[in-house]
Length: 410
Image 1 (cartoon, rainbow, N blue to C red):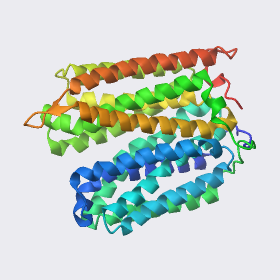
Image 2 (spheres, rainbow, N blue to C red; image 1 turned 120 degrees about the vertical axis):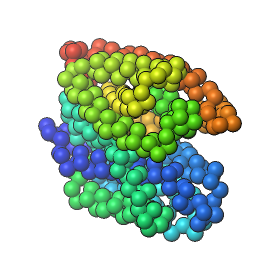
Image 3 (cartoon, helix red, strand yellow; image 1 turned 90 degrees about the horizontal axis):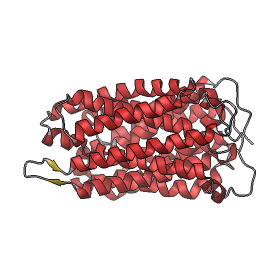
């Protein structure tokens, strides 16, 4: 079993987890915008750039599913060091690619390791973070997504512009290897969570709350993935928003996301999970319907910033709540399953959304309002699902006013 949960979470572990999360997500996000720089030198077709991130996402889902039964048998720290090292070695090797095939294979290998890496990292955080602190602490680690958009992607684009397209892969890979060394040196030792011969997924998947949690995660990600990849085109061609100003939208959205996640985490830890869940989802539904389904005249900066902030807040609240479902010896397996479900939902929804949309001669998207309505319906469904999970968790504790006291399986 893992070491006993400490009374106070080691700050060095939280900071390492944040940095690993930021660099891992950022190295996946940077491939699309870097495409314009490497398609020519590598002889790739511009329309094939999307295969990189799509294939990496599906590979992460497949490897997560295959690894799920075994992850809780591994020493958390040793597994984390190995996965971080391998992921960023593969990413560094991308800088040596001679053609599009080389880059695709190496990038997909690096992406495939991101699934189990994320699962082990989150399981280690759940081992280390006391339940009463999980809202804020998990929100802190989740800031890696926003920081990746604000820091890693712009850094990669700048480096590529001044040196070459190979530089971002080499630098981010090198930084990742430095994080692996820091993890080996500074991360707390956590023994295997399970000494069973092989943790069966049947028991985990047989848990009704687990089933609902995975469904909620899938629905949330599907709605997000159907809309977000189309935003830049929609803003530019449907709303007439200047292309040069779009990065400012994402920067503002990233900053607002950080603040929203911190607020959501604080509400969770104060015993107000319903406020966090209902508040973030209702605001997100309102913004999605008003800004994209009905296309009201609200300022795009306000609409987009609220959309990104509330999306992050609800993802953060969801992670804190569902972390209470798996037992200690099922945490990595559950996180791997969640990674698989989320990756598949994201890939399918993105392809379905792109396939459904049409465009006019001027490039304006046709049918985006329908996707917005579907996304809003998914938000309502996910909110109800989370409230059901909260009710079931509270029914098993004598202090239903505080989520933090719900049983964690430890």
